[in-house]
Image 1 (tube, helix red, strand yellow):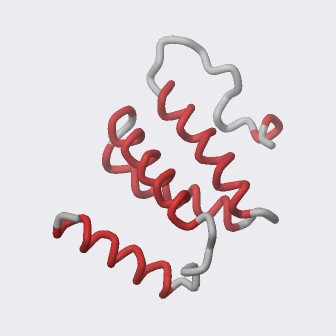
Image 2 (tube, helix red, strand yellow):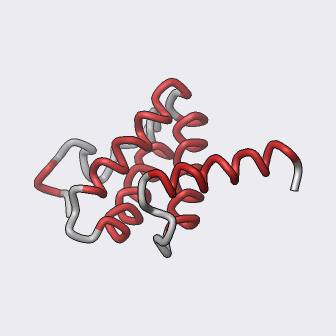
Image 3 (cartoon, one colour):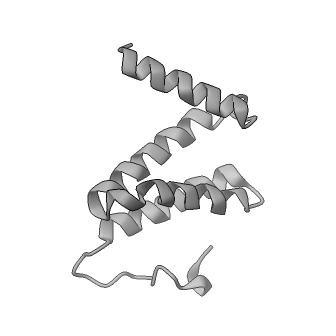
Amino acid sequence: MPETETRTAEWLTAARTELGLEDAAEGQQALDAAAELDALVRTNVDGAVAAQTVFLLGLAAGRSAEPAVAAHDFTEKLSALARSYDADTDRAVAPNDQAQRA
């Protein structure tokens, strides 16, 4: 593993341990999904809001009764929003329509 990847893996392990998430089965899967969402927002929306978007994802998932399930669902919703952001077509559901949220 190259030095940068090793350093990144070490940091993420330390951060998960610090937050008490070292035993979370979905840990790496959630990190991978967050990284993909970050890249998608950077590409399709604006790099300046990518980290904040991932933070909002975690905040919303953490408020759920089943955070891991919610994180997965919210990642899909935010990814779809980022993919269609600035698209010429109308969205099927307005992104801020709380009545349409699961």
